[in-house]
Length: 147
Image (cartoon, rainbow, N blue to C red; front, side):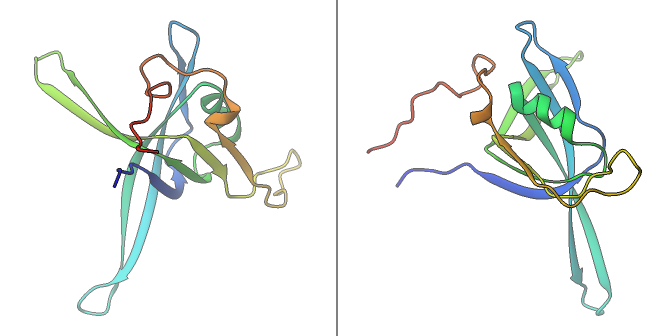
């Protein structure tokens, strides 16, 4: 049997997407998403925990995230989990685990120009909407599938 690397999260943005451009003029969005879990502890008290996730989007999807999302937006992201490593200025190896967004869907209502909320309109976008990828991002690698 093959393997599967797929994360699906629904959460709220902790800040506006941070978008920058590579030397090849490819957009890269860094996004922080919070997910919450509610449960009752052994004393019957309602508890809530928050988990923060790093999401990265490339190309057209990154630009769409910048245009459609803002702090507090409720959003769905889907994609593989990846871990990057680098050496810091002190020579220590650092690691970062993130979700590489391949699909994104806006789930909440947005403010209209008059200060009220539009009816909930879902925006669903994916890397298939994008024509460019950063070299080495794994998008052009051959799958090692037996079929």
